[in-house]
Image (tube, rainbow over all chains, first blue to last red):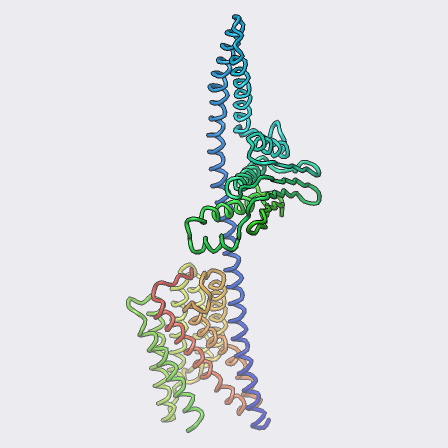
Length: 271
Length: 217
């Protein structure tokens, strides 16, 4: 072996050492990077679970309060109204034919019905005796009855197989969207479409004044108080939908109304 | 200027750099860096003494045999400082390593020869221990490895001991076939030591900068 060959051999061996060193370093760094990514994902998952638990606890407390209010309405206010109705009925039976008594009795009957309906809607077992689409329909009717807007409801397909908790969250989101349409957008017509074919979707479209989503994002970023609450409301809607496995999409622009589309992107989480 | 002298000077420069960076770590230093400081000081003294004895053509293999054994024990203590739970296994490694060096000395009958078989056993054992430590670090560190001082420190030690094992193991056979090639290959060892100390320099620099803030556990 001549000197040049020996030199080449040494260089090759040295280079091999260097390559092994770099390889080991690179491999360890890749292992570490993937471990940290996994760790971050686990933290995010734990965070999501904690949010769900907090939300579940909040909802339970809220349901309990609503249930108590509903029971009180039914047992106390409802009973008082019934007693008043019976009293007036007795007065009428004693030969008093004042037409105002009949009018008051009518109003009392409507009030009793309204209190019963309200008591039922506050009950946590609201899904026992009615479906999701029936709840949407009742809510629409309530808005129409109050003369706030015209609500069109379209139902296509079978009733969605959602858990009671998921139904409750989606229904509260629906109520919030309707409330926003009436309060902020001054909408006069609201179209609601519930479709359950290849996937379950709920679409709510209003003819209100709409808004610029980019402006809301900017206001959130700069924490401008006038728009901040509105922006937080939108974020909350998305967050709550995310917790039950739904995607909330919003399309709107100034003067062009507002459309919310809620679609199920995975099996609902055990919220 | 001969290649040997240049290598010696480069090696001393790398050790000095590492020593300087280690000395700049704010006190009180973690136990790991106190041990590292001792190791670097011992190495510096050995290399200076080695250069002088080589210059005067004196046999210094006994000194290198002792220095290598000391280095081995200090590195085991350093690993223990990072992983106190490994004490039992490290004690076993120490026993096997010292046994191998002792057996080699018994076979050779003199310290005037380099205890290559013992060094080979120690090199392999330390490489495995350091690789296990690095693997553990990669799987537990919440900080990117390039920012973790102990990563560079252990990589440096792995380069030296991991590189030494195959070199020492093969050189004997290469020497029988081609003594000149074996002499040339021997020159790779100082280069491994220089790389090791440059990586240790980086570790000390990072430790000096981060102090105790860094949590990679």
